[in-house]
View 1 (cartoon, rainbow, N blue to C red):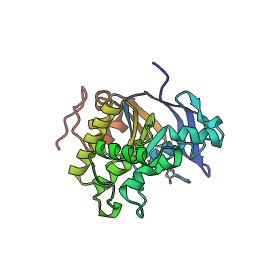
View 2: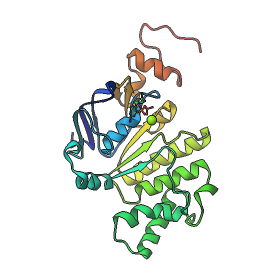
View 3: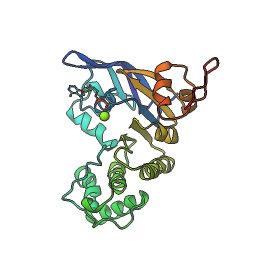
View 4: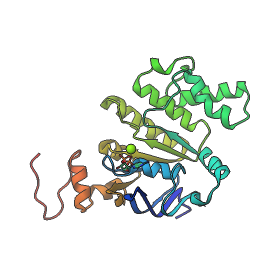
Length: 258
Ligand SMILES: Nc1ncnc2c1ncn2[C@@H]1O[C@H](COP(=O)(O)OP(=O)(O)O)[C@@H](O)[C@H]1O
Ligand SMILES: [Mg+2]
């Protein structure tokens, strides 16, 4: 395999002696969508914060495109974060700015682009997430699904190598979360970037994932393609999945009545 987009090597993290991640070992392939699933409190957000260098691991190494993030100084971390786009759980839009200003924000901050170029880039990226011509709208006028789309536009406007999504369908109704899942699939095809999605939505996970890793109790308890995960014999995995999707019975396992 070529250099993974992200590699966690024996990463552990505790807060005041309470272990949150334990010996997490995971390679995330480039150019694919990997979904990290796990119940609430499993350590998913801590995983993301480690990945962007907002937290340091107690043990282990974290490599992003082969570069050891635990050895980077502030300048190095800044450069690294520019290569990573992030769609925050609540969209994290600036409510006092228009949609256009929100999307332009990273361009103003990280590039020397001039206004006409910025306007063109913003128009183009808003169109690509299905929101053409919404530059002058205010975030407060938008639906939850539209806010996520604006958040995604802002996350990809700098053309990052890696896009992180923290619970992209949280807080959305089922129809809107289906539409966001569909958008994630389309964008991944179109952009060819590495997508890393944090989720506890199992149904959505199976729609968007090329690879799935399951976090439970601070450990990676399963990893594989959606098919491999669906057929995992691991009782923890099966118990977690079964709450949300019908599972084929394993050989020797009794069919359960719904
Ligand atoms: N900065 C922190 N200080 C202390 N405990 C934390 C901190 N961040 C997360 N935790 C704890 O780590 C555990 C995992 O949290 P989190 O990664 O947010 O879970 P998830 O995102 O999977 O729901 C939780 O028990 C949480 O209370
Ligand atoms: Mg979380």
